[in-house]
Image 1: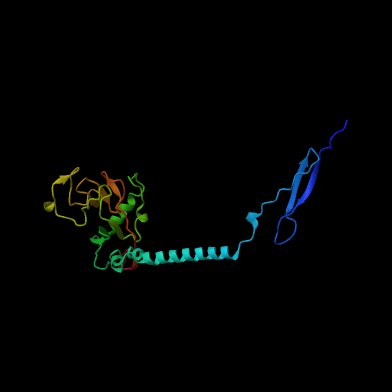
Image 2: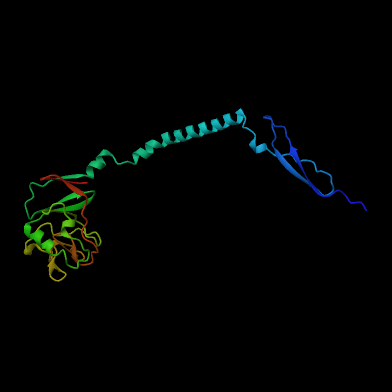
Length: 237
Protein backbone atom coordinates (compact mmCIF):
# COMPACT_ATOMS: atom_id res chain seq x y z
CA UNK A 1 0.00 0.00 0.00
CA UNK A 2 1.48 3.26 -1.04
CA UNK A 3 1.10 6.33 0.93
CA UNK A 4 1.37 9.81 -0.31
CA UNK A 5 4.23 12.02 0.71
CA UNK A 6 4.29 12.88 4.39
CA UNK A 7 3.10 16.33 5.37
CA UNK A 8 5.83 18.87 5.40
CA UNK A 9 6.37 22.59 5.65
CA UNK A 10 8.03 24.30 2.85
CA UNK A 11 9.80 27.63 3.50
CA UNK A 12 10.55 29.76 0.56
CA UNK A 13 11.82 33.22 0.10
CA UNK A 14 9.53 35.75 -1.47
CA UNK A 15 11.02 38.30 -3.73
CA UNK A 16 9.48 41.37 -5.28
CA UNK A 17 10.58 44.16 -7.49
CA UNK A 18 12.44 46.19 -4.88
CA UNK A 19 14.23 49.22 -6.30
CA UNK A 20 16.65 49.12 -3.38
CA UNK A 21 17.41 45.40 -3.79
CA UNK A 22 17.45 42.72 -1.15
CA UNK A 23 14.98 40.28 0.32
CA UNK A 24 11.66 41.77 1.45
CA UNK A 25 10.47 38.90 3.62
CA UNK A 26 9.61 35.24 4.01
CA UNK A 27 6.40 33.34 3.37
CA UNK A 28 5.34 30.05 4.86
CA UNK A 29 3.73 27.41 2.65
CA UNK A 30 2.24 24.22 3.98
CA UNK A 31 1.24 21.23 1.96
CA UNK A 32 -0.47 18.02 2.83
CA UNK A 33 -0.16 16.73 -0.72
CA UNK A 34 3.51 17.36 -1.27
CA UNK A 35 2.89 20.16 -3.75
CA UNK A 36 4.11 23.59 -2.75
CA UNK A 37 1.73 26.49 -3.07
CA UNK A 38 2.94 29.47 -5.01
CA UNK A 39 4.41 32.24 -2.90
CA UNK A 40 2.12 35.21 -2.25
CA UNK A 41 3.68 38.59 -2.98
CA UNK A 42 4.10 40.90 0.03
CA UNK A 43 2.20 44.19 -0.23
CA UNK A 44 4.64 47.01 0.40
CA UNK A 45 2.58 49.76 -1.22
CA UNK A 46 2.30 51.72 2.04
CA UNK A 47 6.04 51.73 2.65
CA UNK A 48 7.22 53.02 -0.67
CA UNK A 49 9.06 56.35 -0.46
CA UNK A 50 7.09 59.51 -1.22
CA UNK A 51 7.78 61.10 -4.56
CA UNK A 52 9.01 64.66 -4.91
CA UNK A 53 5.64 65.66 -6.39
CA UNK A 54 3.74 64.55 -3.31
CA UNK A 55 6.11 66.39 -0.95
CA UNK A 56 5.78 69.56 -2.99
CA UNK A 57 1.97 69.33 -2.93
CA UNK A 58 1.98 68.92 0.87
CA UNK A 59 4.25 71.95 1.20
CA UNK A 60 1.92 74.04 -0.95
CA UNK A 61 -1.10 72.98 1.15
CA UNK A 62 0.66 73.96 4.36
CA UNK A 63 1.84 77.31 2.99
CA UNK A 64 -1.61 78.17 1.63
CA UNK A 65 -3.29 77.33 4.95
CA UNK A 66 -0.80 79.43 6.90
CA UNK A 67 -1.26 82.44 4.63
CA UNK A 68 -5.06 82.12 4.82
CA UNK A 69 -5.00 82.03 8.65
CA UNK A 70 -2.67 85.04 8.75
CA UNK A 71 -4.90 87.00 6.39
CA UNK A 72 -8.02 86.20 8.43
CA UNK A 73 -6.33 87.37 11.65
CA UNK A 74 -5.19 90.59 9.98
CA UNK A 75 -8.71 91.26 8.71
CA UNK A 76 -10.38 90.69 12.10
CA UNK A 77 -7.78 92.42 14.29
CA UNK A 78 -9.33 95.93 14.00
CA UNK A 79 -12.60 94.52 15.34
CA UNK A 80 -10.87 92.66 18.16
CA UNK A 81 -8.87 95.74 19.09
CA UNK A 82 -12.04 97.85 19.18
CA UNK A 83 -13.30 95.68 22.07
CA UNK A 84 -10.50 96.91 24.34
CA UNK A 85 -11.46 99.80 26.64
CA UNK A 86 -10.38 103.18 25.37
CA UNK A 87 -8.05 105.47 27.29
CA UNK A 88 -11.05 107.59 28.31
CA UNK A 89 -12.86 104.57 29.77
CA UNK A 90 -9.77 103.47 31.68
CA UNK A 91 -9.38 106.97 33.09
CA UNK A 92 -13.01 106.96 34.30
CA UNK A 93 -12.48 103.60 36.02
CA UNK A 94 -9.77 105.07 38.23
CA UNK A 95 -10.60 107.77 40.75
CA UNK A 96 -8.07 109.88 42.65
CA UNK A 97 -9.21 111.43 45.92
CA UNK A 98 -7.58 114.25 47.84
CA UNK A 99 -8.10 113.32 51.49
CA UNK A 100 -6.70 116.47 53.03
CA UNK A 101 -10.02 118.43 53.18
CA UNK A 102 -11.90 115.57 54.92
CA UNK A 103 -11.94 116.14 58.66
CA UNK A 104 -12.30 113.29 61.17
CA UNK A 105 -15.97 112.30 61.42
CA UNK A 106 -16.78 113.49 57.89
CA UNK A 107 -17.86 111.35 54.96
CA UNK A 108 -17.78 112.04 51.26
CA UNK A 109 -19.24 110.31 48.20
CA UNK A 110 -17.41 109.76 44.91
CA UNK A 111 -18.54 107.97 41.78
CA UNK A 112 -16.56 104.97 40.63
CA UNK A 113 -17.65 102.86 37.63
CA UNK A 114 -21.15 104.26 37.88
CA UNK A 115 -21.60 103.45 41.58
CA UNK A 116 -21.42 105.67 44.67
CA UNK A 117 -18.46 104.99 46.93
CA UNK A 118 -18.50 106.18 50.54
CA UNK A 119 -15.25 107.37 52.10
CA UNK A 120 -15.40 107.82 55.87
CA UNK A 121 -12.67 109.54 57.89
CA UNK A 122 -13.34 107.67 61.09
CA UNK A 123 -12.87 109.14 64.56
CA UNK A 124 -11.11 107.16 67.30
CA UNK A 125 -14.55 106.50 68.82
CA UNK A 126 -15.88 105.05 65.54
CA UNK A 127 -12.81 102.83 65.17
CA UNK A 128 -13.15 101.60 68.75
CA UNK A 129 -16.86 100.88 68.31
CA UNK A 130 -16.19 98.84 65.18
CA UNK A 131 -13.40 96.80 66.74
CA UNK A 132 -15.30 96.19 69.96
CA UNK A 133 -17.79 94.11 67.96
CA UNK A 134 -15.27 91.99 66.07
CA UNK A 135 -16.01 88.91 68.15
CA UNK A 136 -19.80 89.10 68.01
CA UNK A 137 -21.93 86.65 66.07
CA UNK A 138 -22.42 88.89 63.05
CA UNK A 139 -24.54 88.05 59.96
CA UNK A 140 -21.40 88.28 57.80
CA UNK A 141 -18.45 87.87 60.21
CA UNK A 142 -15.43 89.99 59.37
CA UNK A 143 -12.96 91.78 61.63
CA UNK A 144 -12.63 95.53 61.22
CA UNK A 145 -8.92 95.37 60.40
CA UNK A 146 -9.71 93.09 57.44
CA UNK A 147 -11.83 95.82 55.87
CA UNK A 148 -9.46 98.78 56.07
CA UNK A 149 -5.92 99.54 54.96
CA UNK A 150 -5.60 102.41 57.41
CA UNK A 151 -7.71 102.44 60.55
CA UNK A 152 -8.87 106.03 60.08
CA UNK A 153 -10.18 105.50 56.52
CA UNK A 154 -13.06 103.23 55.54
CA UNK A 155 -13.93 102.87 51.84
CA UNK A 156 -17.13 101.01 50.86
CA UNK A 157 -19.59 100.99 47.99
CA UNK A 158 -22.69 102.94 48.93
CA UNK A 159 -25.34 100.46 47.80
CA UNK A 160 -27.14 97.98 50.02
CA UNK A 161 -26.21 94.35 49.43
CA UNK A 162 -29.91 93.43 49.61
CA UNK A 163 -31.40 95.02 46.50
CA UNK A 164 -28.90 97.73 45.62
CA UNK A 165 -30.62 100.71 47.29
CA UNK A 166 -28.47 103.78 47.90
CA UNK A 167 -27.87 104.10 51.64
CA UNK A 168 -28.44 107.01 53.98
CA UNK A 169 -25.86 108.06 56.53
CA UNK A 170 -23.34 110.18 54.72
CA UNK A 171 -24.52 113.23 56.65
CA UNK A 172 -26.12 113.75 60.04
CA UNK A 173 -29.48 115.44 59.58
CA UNK A 174 -31.25 117.32 62.36
CA UNK A 175 -34.28 115.48 63.65
CA UNK A 176 -36.61 118.11 62.22
CA UNK A 177 -35.31 117.30 58.74
CA UNK A 178 -35.86 113.56 59.02
CA UNK A 179 -38.55 111.77 57.08
CA UNK A 180 -41.08 109.39 58.57
CA UNK A 181 -39.85 106.75 61.05
CA UNK A 182 -38.84 103.34 59.82
CA UNK A 183 -38.17 100.02 61.56
CA UNK A 184 -38.13 100.37 65.32
CA UNK A 185 -37.88 104.12 65.37
CA UNK A 186 -34.76 104.35 63.18
CA UNK A 187 -35.36 107.34 60.93
CA UNK A 188 -34.46 107.46 57.29
CA UNK A 189 -31.59 109.89 57.03
CA UNK A 190 -30.03 108.81 60.30
CA UNK A 191 -27.04 106.49 60.48
CA UNK A 192 -28.97 103.82 62.32
CA UNK A 193 -28.40 102.20 65.65
CA UNK A 194 -24.74 101.38 64.91
CA UNK A 195 -23.86 104.86 63.62
CA UNK A 196 -22.99 103.54 60.15
CA UNK A 197 -25.44 103.51 57.25
CA UNK A 198 -29.10 102.72 56.88
CA UNK A 199 -31.29 101.52 54.00
CA UNK A 200 -34.44 103.66 53.90
CA UNK A 201 -36.22 101.15 51.65
CA UNK A 202 -35.95 97.89 53.54
CA UNK A 203 -34.35 98.72 56.89
CA UNK A 204 -30.89 97.14 56.67
CA UNK A 205 -28.40 98.76 59.04
CA UNK A 206 -24.60 98.80 58.89
CA UNK A 207 -21.97 99.76 61.46
CA UNK A 208 -18.91 102.03 61.26
CA UNK A 209 -17.01 99.22 59.55
CA UNK A 210 -19.71 98.78 56.89
CA UNK A 211 -20.78 95.41 58.30
CA UNK A 212 -24.43 94.44 58.15
CA UNK A 213 -25.99 94.37 61.62
CA UNK A 214 -29.75 94.18 60.96
CA UNK A 215 -32.26 93.85 58.15
CA UNK A 216 -32.44 91.65 55.05
CA UNK A 217 -29.02 92.52 53.61
CA UNK A 218 -27.05 89.25 53.34
CA UNK A 219 -23.53 90.69 53.18
CA UNK A 220 -21.33 93.49 54.41
CA UNK A 221 -20.84 96.53 52.20
CA UNK A 222 -18.29 95.85 49.47
CA UNK A 223 -14.80 97.28 49.88
CA UNK A 224 -13.62 98.36 46.40
CA UNK A 225 -9.94 97.97 45.43
CA UNK A 226 -8.08 101.04 46.58
CA UNK A 227 -4.63 102.15 47.70
CA UNK A 228 -2.92 105.12 49.30
CA UNK A 229 -0.36 106.95 47.20
CA UNK A 230 0.63 109.03 50.22
CA UNK A 231 -0.93 110.37 53.41
CA UNK A 232 -3.37 112.61 51.56
CA UNK A 233 -4.02 110.85 48.24
CA UNK A 234 -6.05 107.72 47.60
CA UNK A 235 -6.83 106.00 44.33
CA UNK A 236 -9.73 103.63 43.69
CA UNK A 237 -9.04 101.31 40.78
